[in-house]
Length: 407
Figure 1: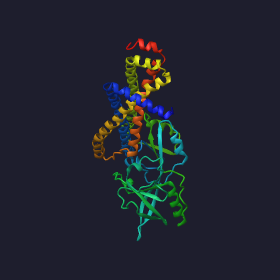
Figure 2: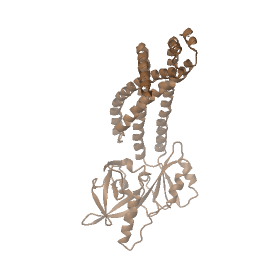
Figure 3: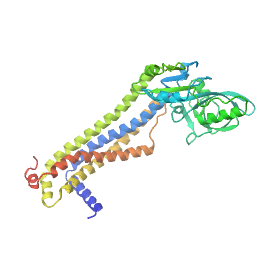
Figure 4: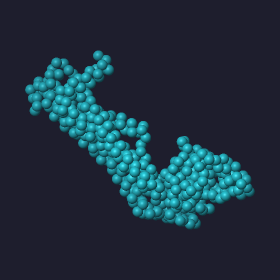
């Protein structure tokens, strides 16, 4: 008998055994379905809420701002973007701050006053260079953009600028593409500025220097470092760590905003712990159910061993039954969870939109991947739950099983 035909035989036998007690199999599958639906719904909702809250938290701005000592800071807009300043920080300071205890991420920015060629005249504008890989205050405000990643030569337009997505801007002889537009933040500098990558800003600086006798500005320095703190971290930790650097100044944002963000982040992280405990409870439940089931079937199992069934085959048969019923329960749980998600999607989406935050619903591919994972998880719960009872039964002698049925 080939391995494939052997597997089909075990599945067929498992289905026949489950059909002998359909009520019990249905209740076990229903219990697993409720557990899988809860896990499936929790993980997807956590992912959606986490992404949406991440956008909301990022729109609150940074927890701290590190700037040169001479820079004058207007606190309200400073937590989203750097203030206009001719002063810069040593670029190496970004790595130093990122390694400080309690710091989660550091997003450097560089300010530059520029002139845009409008065809008939030049007009002044603000250009802010940032790193999309480390940014957490600019990209979350992206309202519309081209269907591709940011490339060198792209700029983002503030919410109150006139440029449209796909337009071309002429800056110092270079044609730049408007990659996207940001939402309106009611922060003047942020809404009227242009944003681009450090590479593009450096290229513009070289072009500007080539057209004048003025030296190019040092593109290696940063105008400011925007800092997000890790959960549980205190702004005073960073202040103390940088106290020995007289050339820098640390500006803190609203302590209430920082506290709310850290608290909600911890709460969302706790959902993973609760989900893990739920899975553990499901494994224990299946183990208890199968201990009772195999206790009732001791005579049957003993006869199977007596007629020549090998012990590994008996274990495989029991595990196949458990995995089959829990897999069916898992599939039903996905259907149940999907229905619940459709109900939540409308209400949650409306709630987030009313707060001015887009609801980041997972993509269909992510939902399908979670669904497949839910069915596989249900099968794994059946496998783990029935493993110990099946092994204990297979270790006993056939005559003991036949004589002690139900004990």
